[in-house]
Length: 84
Image: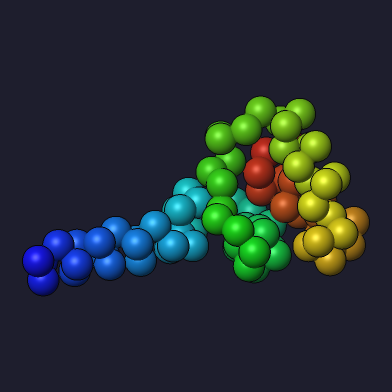
């Protein structure tokens, strides 16, 4: 029973990890840093390939007020995601 509880805790904490986005090595560190901090602060981080570019665009529009970002920041995130 003790091992079962430990296994459940391990799975729960692993699922909450913010490092689910591709590796930290990227050509766009500023966009990735913004993505990790602004988007990952409220929900899980989605892989860049998880949505099509037009879907990302819709998501970015709907989340811009919640993320409290300015146009240059959103542009950096879009470049990191690959929709610009």
